[in-house]
Length: 172
Image (tube, rainbow, N blue to C red; front, side, top):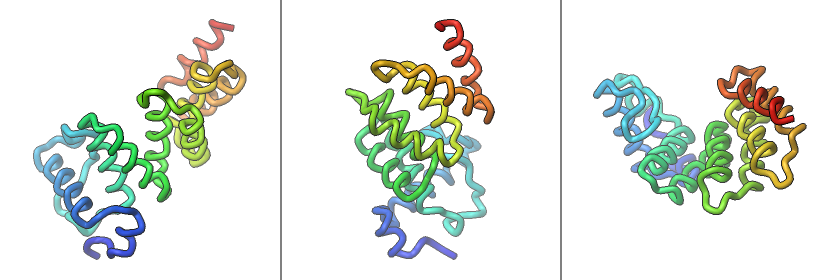
């Protein structure tokens, strides 16, 4: 198999060097016995898989994690958006969370758009985040929509969704 061909890499805006760097980082984290790689949630890789198993879209997402964990939000957003645009659902949910809670000022419209895409693909973090958007960040809040999203997230096992539903009930 080997590295992805340059057509794929170019269309994603990812260079072979970027992919190599992510593979090296992930591999070193694995060899060191650190499955989440201290530089961020870089996942786990079997050292014997090597470069043959690299997914360029996931590697793009992982670069977003690297930059986010280094405190470089602008570069993290660039890499997450490249991955999300290529269909990476976790990157979509990450963008939603970052636009809502980390960017200053928050971009609620962008957060909702990315979370909608990720939630449509079944991502529970995005479902939960939409509940937070509608219940806490929208002005005025839409508590009925927040409840619907928290219920969807709870039905799929999101760990914080039941507590969020209880909070909504207590405030009603």
